[in-house]
Image (cartoon, rainbow, N blue to C red):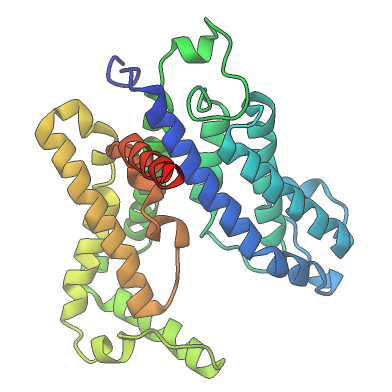
Length: 301
C-alpha cells in the first residue's frame, strides 16, 4: 500500500484537476445545444438510466438547459479550485446528471463515462491545495494527510478498469475467436455501412482496410493486448524505471488505439484522444508551471 499512498507534490494533483476540469468545461459547453435538442424529443423516447431513474418523466427542455448551464459554471469553478470542497462535489454530480440525462433518450453513449468518473475521484480529493482561487484544505485535514498521490492512482485504476472490462467483454462474447480478426472486420464493415445508408461520414480508412482482411488479425490482437494490458498504468510506477517506461508505452498504444477507431469507424472518444486521462503517469505540474511562467513573462513585457 506504500505505493498507493506514496506522496507527490500538491501541484501535480492540482495540474490534473485543472486539465480534467478544463476539458469538462469545454466539453459541456460545446454540447449545450445537443442537451437542449435531445430534451425536446417526444416523451415516448425517454428511457431514464442511472440517476435519472428517479424522474417519473422528462423535464421541461428549458429546465434541462438551465441545469446544463449550471454544470458548465460549476465545471469552470472546479477547474479554478474555487471553494473546492463545496463546488467540486456539486460539479461532479452535475456532470453525472447532464450526461446521464443525455443518455436517457434511447441510446446510451460511453464517450463521457471516464470523464465523469475522474471528476468524481477528484471531487473526493484535496486537489485544490495548490493553484486554486479558493481556500485550501485546513491544516491536518485527513485527505491532505493521506498525501496527494492516492487520487492519481485512483484515477489510473478507474482508467484501467474501463479498458480491462472492454477486453474481458470481448473474450466473454467471442473467446479466442476474436483474435482471428473476422469479428472486428465485420463490426467495422457493418458500422460503416450503417453510416453510408444514413448519409453520415464513412471512416477515412474503412474502405481501404476492409479490402485486406488479414490486417484485422493484427488489429484484433493489438486491441486485446492494449485493453488487457491496461493494469500497467496502475502498477508501472511500483515496478521502477522500466515499469514507468512500460506505462508510458501503453499510453502511446492506447491513444493510437483511439486514433485507429476514428480512422476505421469514425467513432470519437474525445477524452482519451485529448491524452488527459493518462497524464497521471507523467508530471503535468511541470507543463503548467512552464505555461504560467511564460504567461507572466509575456505580461511583464
